[in-house]
Length: 265
Image 1 (cartoon, rainbow, N blue to C red):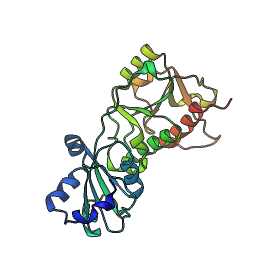
Image 2 (tube, helix red, strand yellow; image 1 turned 180 degrees about the vertical axis):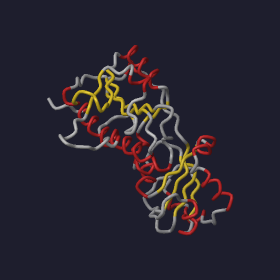
Image 3 (cartoon, rainbow, N blue to C red; image 1 turned 180 degrees about the horizontal axis):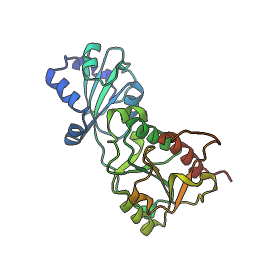
Image 4 (cartoon, one colour; image 1 turned 120 degrees about the vertical axis):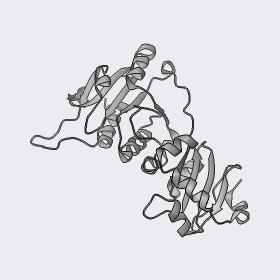
């Protein structure tokens, strides 16, 4: 069904309770309790509507073009004013449309049936960095990410925004990374490569797959428990004379994913 087929029948004011309930989803606690998340902006919402994720509600101003949007039958549509959109948005300049969707359950993962590059994120707490890493993983064709349990919530609105739709094509799991690594080595013979400031130059590292690629936080690097179980520490050499303390985790991840996913022969 296309949205414009019934949009005229569901034009209504957004209630105060609805505004309160949506604003509550800005907080981790309520997103996890309700198993819902927020997506904002035309690009992100269109990607969401094209995914298999269940979209429960859609709020849009009259400026949002609904003529070519296929919508799920269970999705409620509300045309609202720009002032109402401002009340439920996290953006300084709200962008025409907001969707409320169910948090998907990741597929059961089996290391035995995969022979690719898998990304492990260790202690990534900045939403922008996590979103960038998800988007970059999508660019390089990765489909699986394991996050340590202290990483920022994948469905934090800022992560959803910065991932620009790539999140909806990714299976993301939150688990103890040392346990993930142990399982991968035991069942799939994975090589575990971790980004480290004191590692050997990444272009000298072994590139065989299957591989787990670990990216730690830019301030602390890999956690001690993960550091003990990596096979190879891969470094990104800095220029002679550089006094930069660290490299942004998103940029480091992009360099390493580009190399290990498509190594130059």
